[in-house]
Length: 152
Image 1 (tube, helix red, strand yellow):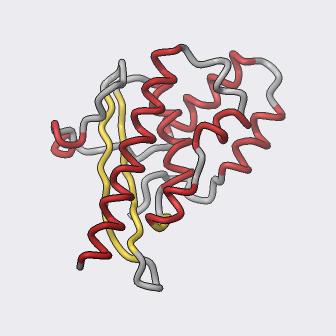
Image 2 (image 1 turned 135 degrees about the vertical axis):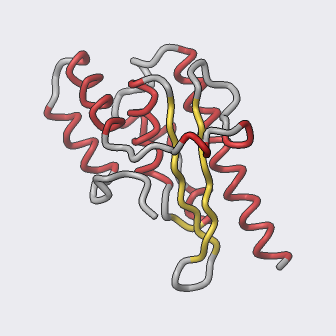
């Protein structure tokens, strides 16, 4: 199950695309376009358990546990928001995290990746807090998957 329709997009692709765009207004439009490529969530998945707290906008994150070919816990994420720019930020986070093993997820530094894109300086404090809340939720789910694998 893929969270984005443009599954071949990597963070390096996004960084390269950002480097080609000088104007921040255009970069925001690009982030919004990334969000439009998300498959989103059906209404039935927009439940309280999937809601991410700490975001100014409504954000829902669905975690789908699985295993990779080596049998390690791996997670796929689907997410949605009621705000266009936030959907774009979600798309970047899903590019970083979805389909990875729980261990890999815990090693990814999303804040550094956002720094590579220059987003840290251009997001409002509320949006930055929202990104941190989403990252913490993803990391919490990865830790839970690892704990479940070691106890099972």
